[in-house]
Amino acid sequence: MPPAGAGWYSWAVAPMIPRSRRSSRLARSPRHALPASAAALALAIAFTPLSGCTAPGGSRPDSRPPLDERVAATTAPALRALYDQRIDWHACPDDGDTAPDGAATRCATLRVPLDYADPGGRTIGVALARVPAADPRRRIGSLLLNPGGPGNSGVDMVRRGWTNYQGPLHDRYDLVGFDPRGAGDTTPVHCLDDAARDQWNGTDDPTYDHGRVLADACRAHHADLLPHLGTRDTARDLDVLRGALGERRLDFLGSSYGTHLGALYAEEFPDRTGRLVLDGAVEHSVDPTRLGIEQAAAAEAGFRAFAAACATDQRDDCPLGTDPAAAPRRLADLLDGLRDHPMRTDDGRTLTAALGWTAALDVLADGHRSWPRLRDALGPAVTRGDAQGLLALADGADGRREDGSHATPADAYAAISCADAAQAPTDADLRTALAELAARAPLTSRHAPLATLLDPDCRSWPYRSPEHPHPVRAPGSAPILVIGSTADPITPYPWAQRLAAGLEHGVLLTREGDGHTAYDKSGCVRDAVAAYLVEGRLPVAGTYCPSD
Image (cartoon, rainbow, N blue to C red):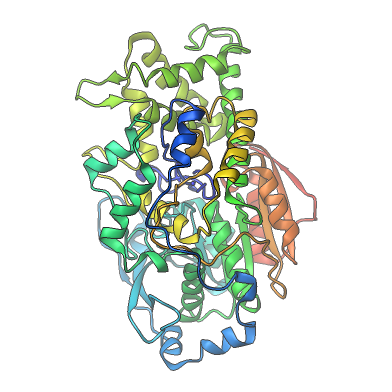
């Protein structure tokens, strides 16, 4: 992760929670703000000792058993049977929200171990969806898709969004989506009920401890699942799926958080890596607080660009005035002002500062193409105190439906992110990071500086992962195409540069432009992705693509 926004790190180490009504889009992860009126309050909360944390355990990723031992482990009878399982494809349930020609879409469940250290023990079901290749005589194989999050549904992505891949990809590949552990219909994590989630998303109370509230609720409902929801376990699920589909190698297109999943798959199974495309790269070679600072700085740039452009527009209806230099601070003051003067709607709901920031930062994650939506919502709020537009944007970011229920990605985002989190930052680390954050993102971080760094706040999480920041090299893998956008506010461009440089066989493709991820914003990128996935042709290193 959101400010939220769909989707991880939508934000700090993961980018943003998808809107359920836009599930066909490449998704990002949310940042759910821990509101604080000032950095001093954030620090006071930050340095309050938290109980319930267990000490980090297990081995570092770079001290895993050698690859030959891990490959040999798949020959264990219990695990081998799961690799050899027959996938029973059947008609997907009719939920009234499937694409018109979705009759070709089939659904299934894959059995995988809950704990790969005990492959003969309890199994869980991974939800799947598949659209067969449109040109079966020229079919290449299966292309696995992941929309990001963490916590977004790959099943929904395929069932409702497969038309985004019409053309060479759909012609030559079966498009296969899956719900990662903790998300969608794969052991879904529901920690907070709807009323508690509303309060959690909207509170402007600086004493409200987001991290502990969520951790306690998740522990109460899912203590048995929490240690097994990490990305490395999902990468192992991917390999079981590859085997059950009868594919010798994994072909994969992952967006946002999905790039982290794809990179860990390549690290775990380099000899089984086929053609991987990682769009909107997330990388974990540095401390998560460093990633939080970099992401906040990228979001700040987009925030300032929107406000300045609004004030520069020749129309006279910009709610931020006509001075482009003053407009960014005016917008920040407007959103922060909701703390003391929240806006109420006719149906009794309240637009708080937390929800206002969620709405703004989530929409701005799409780049300039989304600016009219935010401007249209801000206008009524400024001129007549009408909060409905901003509240609707916040609901979309938070996965809140019209009936008040919430989609699963919000809880799954936290559970998966915290399952990947290693040792919590020290007080000294936080002090240093908060000072740099205030310098690089003074507007977008001032409402909740701590939440910007700790998204989500895993300090009181009941489980500590053995994962640690490290560059992914994946020696022996096939070439991996990494795509970064120069003004991506969710997965900043330096992340793609570092991920591609760290991979032993990484190739970087750059899109010039703003907004999160590149595939849906550039025909040049789509052509390059199709050329690699279908024909095996990589772009020349250093290639730049324009936006549409």
